[in-house]
Image 1 (cartoon, helix red, strand yellow):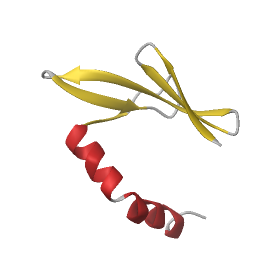
Image 2 (cartoon, helix red, strand yellow):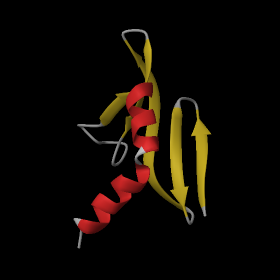
Image 3 (cartoon, one colour):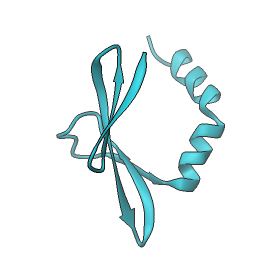
Image 4 (cartoon, one colour):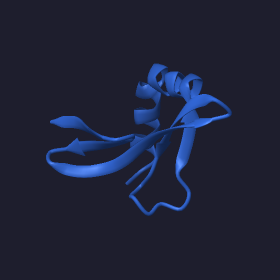
Length: 72
């Protein structure tokens, strides 16, 4: 089971009771962005806005296939 726990502007995605990745929301030049981190100390987080988030959602099956085909 996957669940999202919200604490202030930090979202924790949980799977089977294990915290996988914290996600924060912020603004860049007045536009909302989401920030994905490997853990709370990630020095180089992945940050993107609404348009790129929608692009990811629209192509999630292709992304999953890509990861499956390119990981051991």
